Image (cartoon, rainbow, N blue to C red; front, side, top):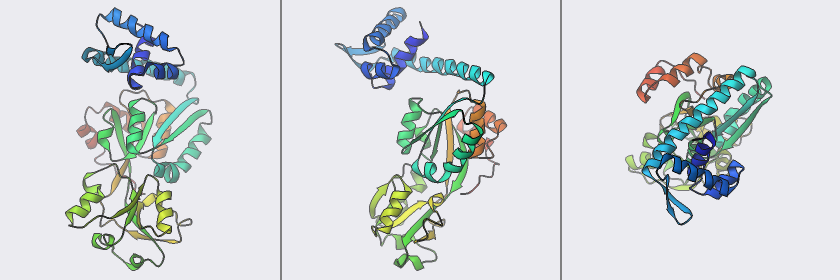
Length: 324
């Protein structure tokens, strides 16, 4: 059994059992991947895949156990490489981050600028998407850090560290009837079409659930993944906007009236997460602390050792999260 065989195996599974696609991403040939998978099956003595002719149709039960173990082995092999790289030079490497448009546009710029100033030889890759898209990148091990809000069930294999709290704000053009409201109500919002995020989180944060519990009809004119898009359509008069508090720029958005909605919507917590068992390099710890100052190395290491969500919650129980 060879390491590259396990790498081929996991790549095929992560690419929808398409050997050609996996081979292309591995920068090798399709026949080469097929041959190594067959050699691995011969050595193990059982099939890893169900087949229909030459096509792979599913992973066998035994094959899934091999895949799960292979992923852990490959992660540890990567950890050894990271350890070697850190011991040789902890100022070079790469860092891939998956996050939402709001984080990338309004929160990360000064953090990334400072990080690049300190680590100019670290290649930084920023991938934007919805929580579902970020979760898929994390599942495929395409990113080192995921930054999102809520949607915890989408990230079962990650250590999630709480970073800061934020609220939603209501925005309307100047002259809009709601602009004069001091304490806007759900009933008042229900009179207008809404322009808001395609929210991935549910429970108390869910707009449909809030309106339904109040016996009100939710009228959504448009949903979008980015606050800039929402503000554009609010300016066009399409509806009343609901955006994250950190997405309000006093200078750029002085044509809009911003209404506090803390009494309507529960606060949200943005977190940063990474794969459990991953060895963090020195500059990764530095990025974590830059993004959330309370995430010092000691606290992060304690979180990594935490065995359950309850232990992790207890670890952060006394941490006062900043508010954005």
